[in-house]
View (cartoon, each protein chain N blue to C red):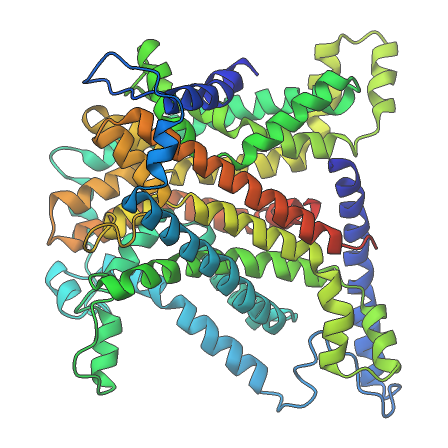
Length: 321
Length: 275
């Protein structure tokens, strides 16, 4: 299943490069008047029978509609609470930082406790997952036995299992191990649940790394562990980046698993914290919005810093099928 | 691997085991009841409603973001600062947590929220409570999911469009194909892999939707108008403690997802051509 997929991704990548080059040459030839009466091939053909400003205007208009919810979230963070319920869509004049400071200085430290938990869960889960799935992916991609192929298939099926299906028994297993309502339990569950994704990404990538490199290192006397950590793992950087980015965001934003596994008493992550904040004070939407903002901020910064990688990872996974 | 077995494979087996019993931790002992849970489920009004609700949501969330996403992707597939800024707008919801999205939209669609304010300004005297009226709640929920999924579809389609070789479009243009025909005969077939992703991912994620339901409507308004199967599995299992019954639901859910995904993959991948 993944063999032809990998090939396809190669083909696609080369096409991207080529078409970019081609596009620039086409543009130039059109500008030089070479195209004569033939209309230049537009990517979508929209420009041909419409006025030139129609595309940007439509694009801006659509994006604006799409942006409304995000706008609402942004302005309400810096608006006093009474204004939020009165006129949620109005501009925040004058802006206030009251909501944010209120959340940061809450007496029960809900936000700080959530943040600590979230950071702990996300960082540890992602770390363990990256190492584990890189090694497992490497093993599965290099071994050719029937058993590993069956194993790969089983792992791939894991990609589409809804968490609800397994949460009830998982809760039982964790209870038996005395890990229910602990951060460690949640991390363990995350590792199990997300390992198929990591393996899937790594295995697909490892197939494109020439096996000769490893053989050469082995001949030079490197142990299997050395080969993996010193030769293979550094080559996997793009795959590691996608795994880190995706699992990081998913686990950070995860709601249902922390809600059930961490349980009501002991702890919250930022997402369940927001959920609790809604329940606790119905009226104080200022705090809720501020809390959401603070909960999203780390991901947002992460995203803005790595936007290119992000989109590449997403589309890389997409074209790989 | 061991962890995977412990937390994914074993639980599925255990779930299936539970589904054959009337297990309830507050009402031991558990008895083997065979397929009774499954039989009961298919006579259970609540479950059948949930099945219907889930199907409607899934259909909307698969179709709407695909249609709109393709349009937006075609619109934004241009170079330039403006377009890359607008692309960022569409990408942003992908990184937002479901809870955050839910809260924002709850405010937006509130009875006195901005949407209704706007409708009133346009002269509608009594706009509906989008989330509190049983007639609309389900569709509002699907809209919210579609909004977030739209960003994903746009990204994937844009990537697909980048992969369409310009020389094919040029050749088609020289042969006299108009823009519509070029799209239909060149671009669209080459977008097949993107379509596959954009069908399967929303399909799987819409089918298991829980967090939005939990935060936005909690299954209501009324009884179960927006309760999805995933939502019912967890309320029956953890709140009502009917673990056997909930497990049967979960297993049915898994089977449906597996079959739907399998069929979709098979049909759509057959369309994909290797360049």
